Image (cartoon, rainbow, N blue to C red):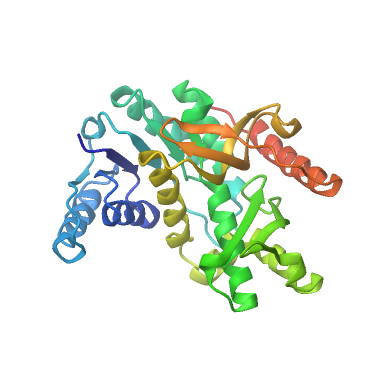
Length: 308
């Protein structure tokens, strides 16, 4: 039996997740949205690219959650996007209601699925998904860390004029301005970037990484990033679907790891067929630990404002 991947939300991020999932042949794709015609039209358009891209999976655009039944992985992108001048936290009230409704309908038809949460504010929406679903913590995962790290990697590769393939980076913490890019754990072909990039330049790259989403929002003016977020979510889905057991930075529910309790925070995890199969605790310096705690405190403060 083929794997089944549902993508909730047929906006830019969701449609791109569906496209990349189909092109990678991870399984049959269901694109669901509340707006009539949008998921059907985008699904049909994607299906018609099949003869060129030569994928064989089924594509279904729908408004009915019944069509998502028995999904192996569900990627939740539903919600309103950020607008210029709007912080992720501004989205909390509206998107929490949307994610709550989505999760209630998903778990009715796919009680054994794994949820990948992309909706912003990411760390908070992952908390909503876990609370509403009642799923164990290994089956609710936030996308943040992969996206933040891929931005860091892209900026490092550009700075050094080297292949992105040889660049690895690690970003921990909340998905926002308080995130913690770890230069010490970021490398080019195994060489720590602190040996390759002067501190003043590296500080600017770290700052740009923290503000990466806002930079794109300011440029687009009428929307937010979608290529990199979609690619990041699909990388996670692929590791789960193929049981690749990749070590990726993701927003995971922590119960004492890194001294953090009861929050979704970006940390390195092993992603396999069971979702998060291991939370990996790396050694942090005092400065890094303080920064991670501050980031977790920012998530906690935002979470305290949430009323479901």
